Amino acid sequence: MALPSTDLDALAGRLARAAGRLRRRLNRQVRAGMESDPLPETQLEILRLVNRRPGIRIHDVAAELGLASNTVSTLVHSLTAAGFVDRLSDAGDGRVARLRLRPAAEDRLQRWRDGRGEILAARLSELGTGDRWLLARALPVLERIVDSLDEEMAGGAPELAAPPEGPHDG
Image (cartoon, rainbow, N blue to C red):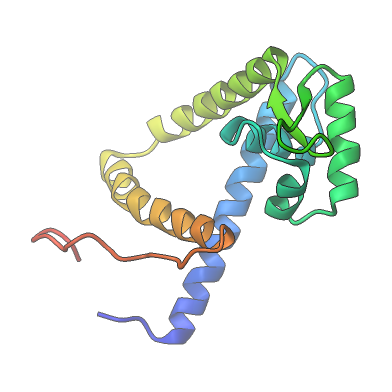
């Protein structure tokens, strides 16, 4: 059964707000529990991106995060000075810098992931079985939405096709 477009707009708004609020709350709680000085969110985004795509160019970081290349270059300079990122010359073009995480950044990102996981696990344990089941059922849909957005950003055609419906799907 299809939702009217106004319901889709409302659903989209609620989903975006909930996802944003969840991410901000988790980040605040993890940041508050960190022993070391917290990094600004944009620097953390750069570290996460370099972690996912080792060897990424500064220009590509800027494009993916929607920032100016000179802004990313300045942030990367700070991350390099702090011992979190190495700037390596591209083998094919010495003018191009490729980024790689240093062990200190890998450790920091792991502590961040662990902190978020602990906070979420505690909240999930407070939910009833039915709510946890509903959430587990919704995750593949959310993951397909994120994958579709990633594909679109990478210049591909977004794909949101659902798997075949089974007898228990609504």
